[in-house]
Amino acid sequence: MKRRKTKRRLWTLLGLVGTGLIFYFSLRVIEFELLMLVEQLDQFYEALLGYFPPTTYFGVPFVDLGEYWAFMMAENLILTVENGQIVWGAMFVTLAVAFAGSVLGLPGALFFGVMASERVVPYPFNFVFRGTMSLIRAIPGLVWFLILIPLAGVTPFTAALAIMVDTTGYLGRLFTDELEEIEDGPIEGIRSTGANRSQVVSFGMLSQVFRQFIAWIAFDLEHNVRAAIGLGIIGGGGLGLELYIQRQTFHYTNMMACIILIFLLAGSVELISQRVRSYLREDDDTEQTGVLDAFVNAPKKILASTMGRRQ
Image (cartoon, rainbow, N blue to C red):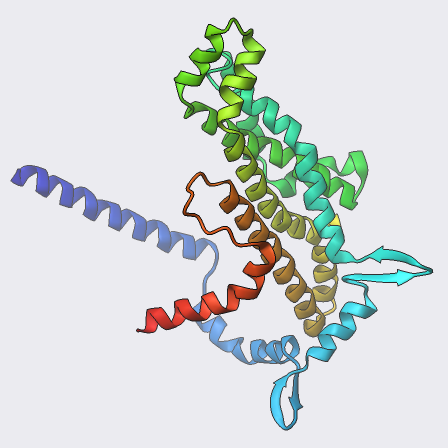
């Protein structure tokens, strides 16, 4: 027992030392300098004044929200109506890229997710599909965007295609993992009725994971909204592109206006995704609050949680 404990402590010590050395060399590689951060504090403070332009409301110092709103309207970041027609702004372009890419990638994710399961395709043939999804996941969405530029140009459509490919790899893997955890009872029951292979897969396997699949789709859409923002920065359009343009011209107030919309968009999609997943839970005691109610009650819950922690 003593030898085992001593050996375990020795390995723990070696692990900590190794982690510390890797961390040290990582700081050297990225050229981390604490003194440089201190020297840049004055410049960062000036940028903060740009991010949060000061003003007064009834003599009380506050952030000038009017500057944010003026920029949003001037650049049509949300939407406008021209000649009786709605012109969708950058925020909805970002949402459209994420949603379109998710829907386009869903068939591929379902196909590869099912075919990669050993319950559907026997080993080792299922590894052809697993390997394909691993290859897709190994390449980041930003790189897929660059790869697809010769196909569709530097456009929001290319960003949607990149999200489509990314969704196929990631969502397909999640589908495969769910299929590996299903029970054998329903499968044997379907087989006993004389069902063919496709019927066994559809009614004996997929029927068991339908809720889980929908929950993962909602989660993936939430992830793809953030991915669409990142793709916009390198030319995929939407809020990401507008944020990059304002950064290039050092318009910090306009940058913050874009960041506010990014926060609202990503937060709204995340909240809706959480509500969808809560409705799909099999636990009957799960709170079934509507999306609008969740928006209204969110500040109260945050305040109650904060007060509870203080107590």
